[in-house]
Length: 255
Image (cartoon, rainbow, N blue to C red; front, side, top):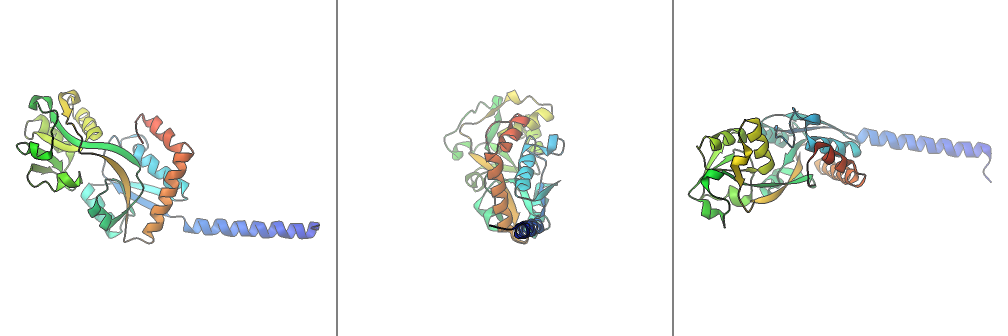
C-alpha cells in the first residue's frame, strides 16, 4: 500500500511532469503568418471573420496549438513573400506540380469548380475539347494557376489581366469572349460590380474541380512539421464538427 507521504510524492512528480510537457508543447507553438489576395466569397477582409476559408484555416491551426494571423496583399506579392520565407504560408492556393516544387502543400481545405465563363449572347454552352475554343479570346488572371492543360494550351487566344475583376468588366464590355476562373468567384464579382450574373453561362464541362490548399514556404524553419500539424488540426475540426459549423454559418455548400 502507498503511504500518504509517498502518494503525495507521486502526485507531485506527476504534476511536475505534466507541467514540463505543457511547457514543451507551448514552446513549440508558433505564430503563423498566412497571406493571400482578397477573393470573396472564400476570403476577403470585408467578409465576416475574413471569409469561411480563413476561419477554417485559423481553426485548424488553433486545434494544432498554433495562432494564425492573416494578411491580404496582391497574389503575386503573396507568392513571393512566402517563397522567400517572409510569410509562413499561402492560404487558398490551387495545387500544381510546379508549385509543389516551391511550396509544401497541405491537405485539401475545400473543393470548388474552375472553368470557362461566357455571356449567353455568345451562344456557347459547352465544348468537346479546349481546341474547340481556339477562335475565342479567353481572359485569365496573371499569376493564377487554372489547370495544367489550360495553362499550357498555347493554341488558345489567351489574354492576361492583373485580376479577375478586370476580366469580368472586359467580358461584360465585349472585349473578351470568355474567362477562365472559379465559378463562385465570378458570380461574386459580377454582383459586386453591378452586372447580372444570370446573363452568363458556365461552360460544360468545368475545367476541373479544384481543391484549395495551404502552401508553406520551404524557406522557413520546419515547414514539413508545420503542414503536418495543420493537417492534424484540419482532421480534428472535421471530426469534432467545427468544420461543418463554419460551413453552415457561412451558408456555403461542399467540403
